Length: 370
Image 1 (cartoon, rainbow, N blue to C red):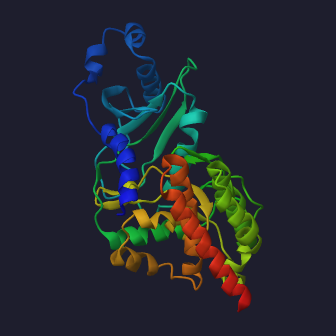
Image 2 (image 1 turned 90 degrees about the horizontal axis):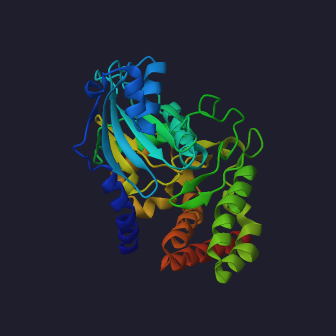
Image 3 (image 1 turned 120 degrees about the vertical axis):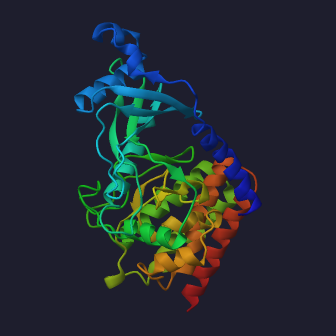
């Protein structure tokens, strides 16, 4: 991991560490059996929402609700119920516990995009052995009082990164999953159902036309990825380089991806670096996504901060071989994340973004001469 990558990772991992510190305070249903009315009136707004949800879902009542840390924008809890559903993992016989995030802000602001992203990743990671362990989303929405929101998902026993071959195969399987209505993409387009964020940066995801291919992808990434980040960065040199020397010729980098190799939408995690990779119940798991449908190669724009070694690529390439122009396009996909890091953290990331764009200009000049 590079020094700059470690610097950015430290800021993000601090929040993640706090999220997994457990408080000893426990709210037990045993202490709330003096009557339904008095029980509900004594609960916090979130506890009332959880009790109502558990009952309506056929899961009994809340058994324990344990604080599990917080971030700068949400609080976390681990929740168990008296009549839990079975695990969504066929190899796990344990009843499901729930991970709950809550916020004083609205669901549309806080959890809608995350929930839809996790639902899409879950749908694209079902069936077969080479799949990711993604938590199932059970519910999300605003408080009935309108003064806050929450999302309820399956609680995973997260552990560190394990088998990189299995991880590579599992990510490839998600990339190969078809765009379907269940996965949130019935028209087979690029984009996503909602705009979301990558880190703290807004990420626009307008849908392209149905049955999109290489041309639509080039336009999407040109306008809603690099163009968007450049507008936020406000760097005159990078903007001029992009507008005059790269964007008008960007299609030349994708000439090998036509006909039988036409780009088809793949579901992308969108922010795949070492801090978002782990394991759960012995299977690879990835989390904190910035999900959208795109070219599978775009997933590797954060590879410089992910530690993907030979074993990972052995697993991934066993299912998705490397295309001819992969290395020519790599600076394009890296530039998106370098620009985003500059917009988040400032500093030397703009120099890395400039180097990526200069590399693209040289490659395009060479292609025009050949």
